[in-house]
Length: 68
Image (spheres, one colour):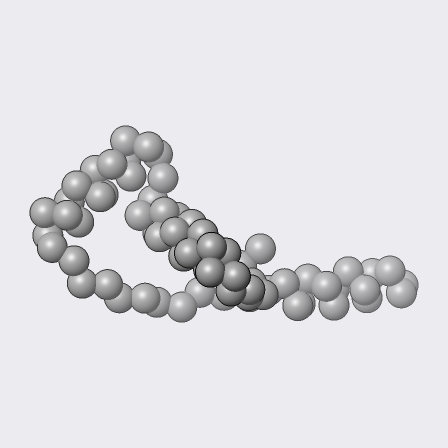
C-alpha cells in the first residue's frame, strides 16, 4: 500500500488529454490510477523493483504487534 505521494507533471497534447480523461471516466477510473498502473507495469516489464512508500512502516508496525 502506498502511503506517500509525489507529483509527476506530464505535458501532452490537449486533445489527447481530453480523450484520455473521457475514456477514464467511462471506465470509472481516475487518470492518476491509470498512470500509476502504467508505471507499475513498465517497471515490472523491465525488471525494475521498488518498495512502495509505507511498506517499510507497515512491516515495522506488524512486528511491533507480534512482539506485544
